[in-house]
Length: 344
Image 1 (cartoon, helix red, strand yellow):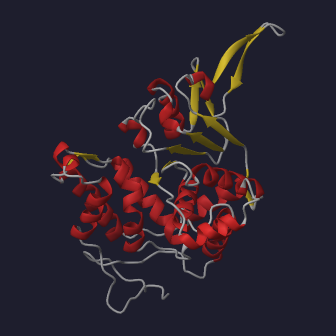
Image 2 (cartoon, helix red, strand yellow):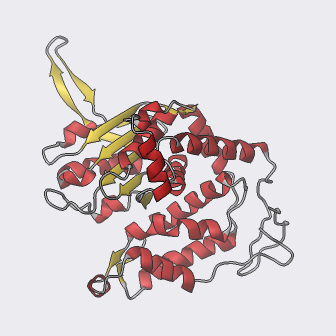
Image 3 (tube, helix red, strand yellow):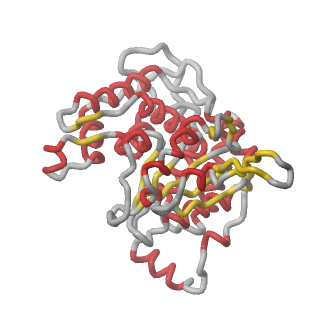
């Protein structure tokens, strides 16, 4: 890949006046570390590179992931394999209708031995939190996650406590089971950086998995390849990736297009635009580039924006999906082009 030459910006043309060269050691280290994590998790979740890459992107950004797919597709395996690949505290919360907010964030209790009130931390106080079947909990319990997912801190009885860093919530839900579930509110959906699915393996991969029938828990075989401090360091590297003004203009136009679409009742907020920009930087660095390309934005638009959209009743009635509408908008909104004599 040829690095675009630095040149003044112009309307609709990419300009790279200040970016990290591809040969920069920071970018090479990020790419190697990202690939190492991807390869390690792929040992447990075979043939699902894109889903794994999206989860790692959320981890590097500092956001959260909603994995929505049919039962038995490997959602929990993916979350646990990611947790086992990084030497950081991990907790799993099995969401049920009787789960209380205090079961998630913790509770203040009176300790008779010390005659003082003490705080017992809930499972949310971990770096990687698996919220399994999140839509089975009541809205009151789901709301306990709103503050910590956005501000990465918890307030109990007027006292605020920070969660460990890095911090990510990996939530799962099954789209086909509606009995005894509660739909996630729009406010909480908007707090998920990415929503994705895993899907069933191909025929060849399915046969390969059956040949390893005695491996009951693939995620348990995964060992750490880095620690939390290195993840934090990689996040700082991603902040150096250059995002050209024309890319920012492109992202803004995409988000604005969701707000004026006749098929959408509610478009994306600015949180969606910020999420798409941050994810694009990770996508670029994982590809060994110190600058963002339009293709990075296109690759990420659906998993970052689709779950933030609310369709009109007419669009829902005709069977349209948010993913299809985002794809249409990508075709309609012109992407910036490379300057003359430049290639990606």
